Image: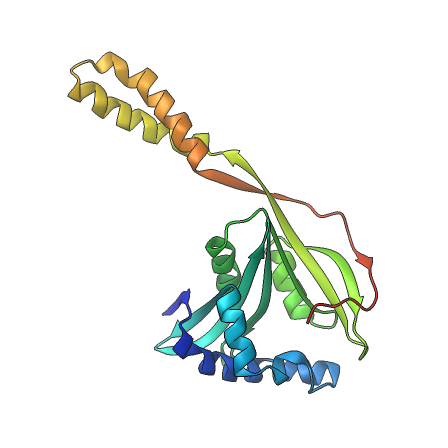
Length: 215
């Protein structure tokens, strides 16, 4: 059974080793074995750990996947969604992506991948991400940036039933069952406001911005 949870400092060595293994296919795809994920050091990974959050996917005690992210204002920047080659195509990437979105609650999420990485692009677009722009690095690799935006709305459908149940309990306790409807409605609206339901907003399309890729 695969479990997704926060990584600890003692996990970073294993995550970096996993990163090197997972990005071999990307290096072959672009014929470039000096890409940043293959040259990143443990000190650099540790700095990312302290800057944001790193999640790990564990299967039978072994780390088989990971993702990291940090928040800046209303935007969460997601990076290095990795799954061990032996576990790819089994839904672990999708679970990690959903988990990191739930971990950092913001209105906007952004990530990027290489333009040849069709599997990654398919995963992100299926998860609701929209392409927004492209950048090309000095070594000629083009990255596609994608985003997912949300707007909040009160989750009244969930709040009202909860509120009516609480209202009925209060009415019984106060020996005035007539209170349960008005009290329940008030509580339901309050609960609904406290439980925002996220609605995705479609992006505005893609544009090319030249040599501005974030590494």
